[in-house]
Image (cartoon, rainbow, N blue to C red; front, side):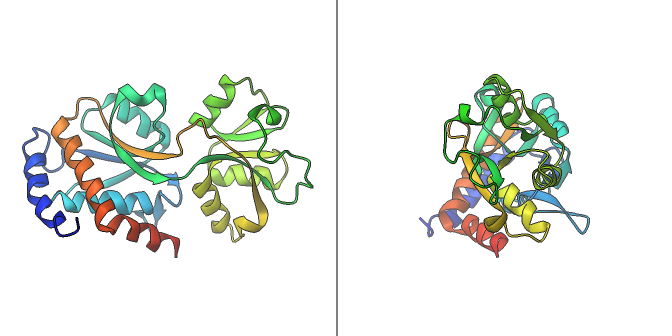
Length: 251
């Protein structure tokens, strides 16, 4: 397979250039601005695992597009309403399925309920979802976890606007559980100079929700463009460059 991948670059480029939206500067690449370790700002530049993967795909396809960081609500709105927009990473939920053109999973990281490791054993571990209904749960405002919990009758929800705020609420015991993307939660704790394995414990995994985040184009984007990115993503997963990015960002 590795020997074949260089030969794929020409067909991929031809496929993309055949698209009417393939001229330089016509695609909007939108990543969430506060989603470490996937996409955030460092020294005034986009940074993170997802940003590195998207930039590699852009180079693979011979494009000059730029990755832009925006608040999540703006990213989602652009993806829903603006043709030729690539949403770098989001959960592939049933309500979003037909509203986007999906490229593929870009990162694997399950949604979880986290608790402080020193909770004294009072909170159930690996219980049923209903076991957590009476606990105060912090959840990112507008997230698919928030919607899921609301749909299942949870009323003790405390919204936060950033993962850092969510962890601070948990640490101050304003909430008992922290609904989070696992890797983003761990990265947030590390940025606060603490060790997630020492301070956090997973109480529950949302196995009915997407276990990762996927890349998707808005409706109105040429199918050839979507297919070019899909093939490019599969290519870097097969030749090891995708895994190398994951390794570099975990060191």
